Image 1 (cartoon, rainbow, N blue to C red):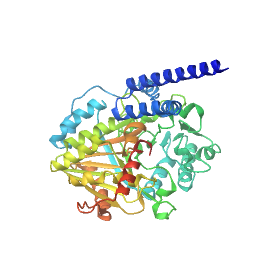
Image 2 (cartoon, helix red, strand yellow):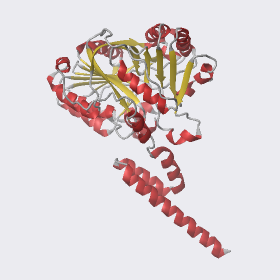
Image 3 (cartoon, rainbow, N blue to C red):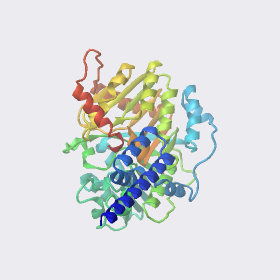
Length: 477
């Protein structure tokens, strides 16, 4: 009996060692970041079974092959051209010509010209216009949202969608598997009672099949009507965005009404996500050729996600920070970037660029405020200005550089958005859009409180421990 027991322990030990070595080899081959690789290997060797399970569920990127295969199917809207047009050159300062070259290398999609980009503040302004456009749709309505609650705001949109169906329009709604469950009962149960609306869930969070993808969420928000008009940005569909109605948890936000040929680039992103969610391939309705151009803003869509070419949004942001000559204005609800982004902000400030970062004074995620505070001192020392806006919580995501380059969409300034989520931003050239967005940013700044760095006022030891401990949870917020 003793011999059998010892033999069993020996076999189990050998299996554990083989498991640890196999997973370690996988980490060495697939994890580019040294801290991440060391962290995973430490967990694997200190807790083999638990570490392996966590790595299999959260550490392996399984999603890139399917994402890339979908991207390569159907008509290719990308172009390998890296030439800069005269129209693009007119819209931005000379120093940003290098940023355009970088942008074409990062995402070889040309800018489309003739667009009109109009910001809408809060759901109080955005939702009625969304409903008006949806209700008047004759061909197609496509809606993608991280959160689409089954509440008064969601019912507004569904009611408009039913009118679109009566007009003969096809309606497709895509909601993320985690975001779907922010309301009870969720939207899926409400849509089942409606006719003519196709509904899909992106990586259902409660399905055993999608459990390994739980940490990878579709954070994109877009609404496309008849292939020619769209709403695009970071605003979810939830009652909290109806700030004027004084909901229990009000949320400030900004989204954009987009008109023009750039909408066709959004259609391609929605098409990929729809197929990825398990639905059949379809050909989105596009605006007829010769449709009058509503504006003159060059714009393009930058999709990003956890596939082989992830990091496009972060790379473009880094390029803009390096090219900035005069000013950088940032509004974000969550500010937990990695060290390279922090360094770029500090270097820009030290070069004489005016850098403003506007954050909410109180987040809607436990521990987020403490984690963000861990980076305040280093930025303030280098001259970066930080402002905190009062309640209600501000979920806006805006970036304007040198009053001529605007970047907005679903991405936050954190590791989750830069590396894990499926995100989508719009890149706009020219002062027309920048001036509109800067007006919103300046209004937020006037209402905010400046964070002041006092070298004589030291943070308590316990507070430092708390802040840095919560900062370690950065990828999982």
